[in-house]
Image (cartoon, rainbow, N blue to C red; front, side):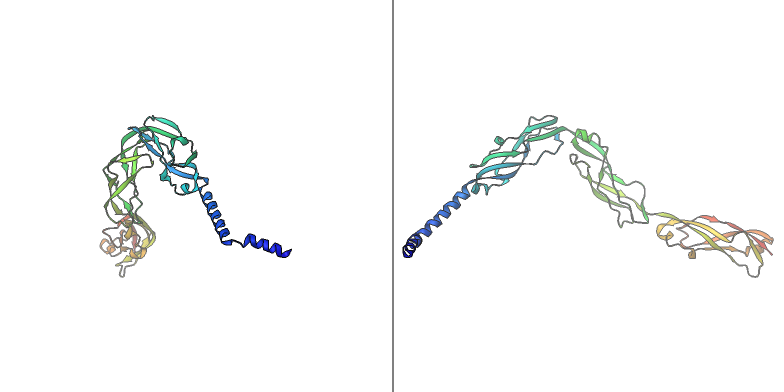
Length: 316
């Protein structure tokens, strides 16, 4: 009994085994081909081409640049599809000012042979249109603050002073000026002129003609004031004179000058004194003498305030 079963299995699985293997391989290939060629779906994103917008009009909203398609077809065909396989153009030749709505249908798009259109998104496109306007506006230069110790002298000059802009009438009518990109003053110590691009604050507004201007900036060193208090008043040329000052022998001073000099000026650089020798010539017991001040860079630094300017001296 066992031998009969064994012989039967051998006849089924072993006899003509080569032919059987070939048959199985053919079946697998057929299954694979059928599987590949079966219809499947795929999503494709394609460009929207807007054409024939009438002259004198401009689009003011942001209509979609792409639409999404759902297509169906053999797997082998879908694998070779790309956005360039489809063309979709929206004709704006009959559009008028205001908001227009366009229904988007699958029958408006011609797919490649063997491909079916199953769906499209969005199903509607809105296009808002306004009159195109042109206008001359002033140019406002934007200048960055100079480095510490320097300042902009006067008003920067712009050449040309005006520019032509164009865009939706509803936006252009409200614009009074446009600005330049920021002019950097980093490292600048003197007057300079630079060519700078113009910019608009709205993506729908364009600059017609020259898109740059020349900006001239005058840079000068900042003038600062610095005050000193309780500076000792010294007495010179007193020799053997016996005298007595009346009032405070401390001075209060304020100086004005270029930043680079004023910031370095300190009390050790300043000498405040009274020449007591002047008492001899006058011969009076009680006299008022001048308080003198000596300091560096006297040609560039100005003594703005001085207290006291004179001091009363008693000769004993």
